[in-house]
Structure formats: C-alpha cells, structure tokens
Image (cartoon, rainbow, N blue to C red):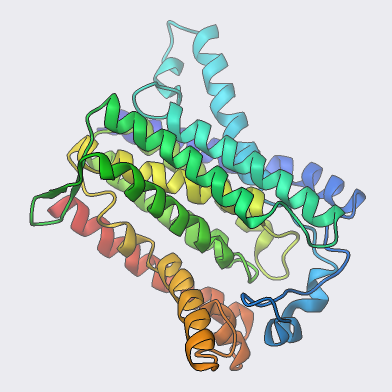
Length: 352
C-alpha cells in the first residue's frame, strides 16, 4: 500500500516541478513569437459577434499568450520518458517500479494525450497566424472521432469490452454500440474544452478531475494508471501556478484537446474493463464540464427556436461574469463546486 502511494506521489511531484522549471522557457518563446490573437474577440455560436464576451475579455485576448497547455503535456512527456530511461539504466533498483509506460494501463492514454495535444498545438498555431482561424471545427471533430473510434474498437475487439457499469445496478450491454457510444462521450468532453475561458478556471477543474480518477484507478488497483492520472494532475497544477489571475498564458487547444480526449480514455479504462464505474461517474466527477456543454446547447437551441438568449452569454461561466461576478469569484466557486462533485463521484465509484 505505502509503495503504491509513493509510486503515485513521485511522478506527480516530478511533473509539477518539471512544469514549474520549463515554464520560464515556454513563456519566453510565447512572448518572443507573440503567441496571442492578432485580432482579439470572439464570435457567438451562431456566427454573430459575441458582444457580451467581447465586453469582458476582448482587450485581454490581444495581450495574453496562448498555448500554455504546452507546459502540461510537455511536463507529462518529460516525466514519463525520464522515468522510462532511468528504469532501463538502473534495472536492478527500485526505479523500474516507477515506470509509467505499461501496455496494459498507460500506453493508450499516453498516446491519446500526445495526439490530442499536438493537433491542438497545430490549431493554436493556425489560430494565431491566420487571425483567429485555426483548423476547421469539422477537421478537429473528425480527428477526435477517429482516435476515440480506434480506442473503442481496441477495447471491443481485443479486450471484449461491450458493457457500461451502472452504480448499484449492474451494467448495460451495448455490444458493438460501445464504439459509437464512446465516440459521443469523447466528442462531448472535447466540446467542454471551452471551459478554458477565465484565468485559473480550466486548470483547477481539470486538476481536480484527474486527481479524482487517480483515486478511482488506485481503488481498482490500476496503480500505474493512477500514477499517470496523478502525473497529469501535477502537470496541470504547475500550469495553474502561472495561470491564476493575472494569467501569464492561457491553456487553449493544445491543452484542452489532449486533456479531454485522455479523460475519456481514462474513464473507459476505469469502467467494466477494471470492474469499476469510471464512465458512469464521469457526469458527476466532470459535472462542471457537463454544465459547460449543456449551457452552450441550451443557448443555441433557445436562440434558434425562440429567437431569445437563455443566458447573457454562453458558456455558463461567462454568464456569471456578465451578470457582475468578478472572474476570480467565478473561478473560486467553480473550484469548490468541482471538488464537491469529485468527492461525490469517487465515493459512488468505490462504494458501488
């Protein structure tokens, strides 16, 4: 038990320290290359100008560098590779026990994190270079769907995963429909990446969620997966150290795309594959993300059906800003709400 806890703590702490160490370098180049929007401001979901959002954030968009998510996946990558190298240089020591790369638990989420983050990085570069026009949304959705479909197919065809656990009530057998189901889960999580809209908000929420799944995986005795989730949480905390108001940079797509895609994989790996409830408790642990997506859907639906906005501005966290809450208050309250949701979700997962 103690050595398993240490296995989680060591890479988590390492990722945090590495993230802190590489941030000055990342920041230098982000400012050197002026990695911010040359044409600040956003358009609404229906294509019109997002007037309420632009009143609050338009000025900051032209001054704050994007691509801060490099700190997250960069520190996870360095930590993972460093431990892998050390484990092979010192095979007769305790170091191999801390190796994060195992075929059964972490190869897939690690690869997913890198793929999503690099595609997100490409989008951010295009976004900066082409005045807010990154990769087409359709292109990004196709990439997310292809990666999710590949992961789901692997679990279905190679591991025989066809069910989703229901807390306190057995499971639902989806058969081959587990593949489109997981694609929809992944797309929904990807859509929640717009929570990266206020200083410190996305970092606190994502760190809480991955820490919660580290706890779920630990309970299921998927210790390496738990350590990997802890490593991601540690890296996010390093990013958050510099993202609290006033933010040194923003996470943007190179952070949110990789994190949301990886979260979907982790949820799948902690479900029936491990006799757990990872997918079932995802809407609870990730309720701040669910509300973010839901507020966008309701806003678009209300405007199209009734020609009336349901919120001052969507997603929900910007609505709170629009009605007068300071950004730091929205962030802090979201953190509190996220921690409560995580605790409830983990409690259900380990007691079902």
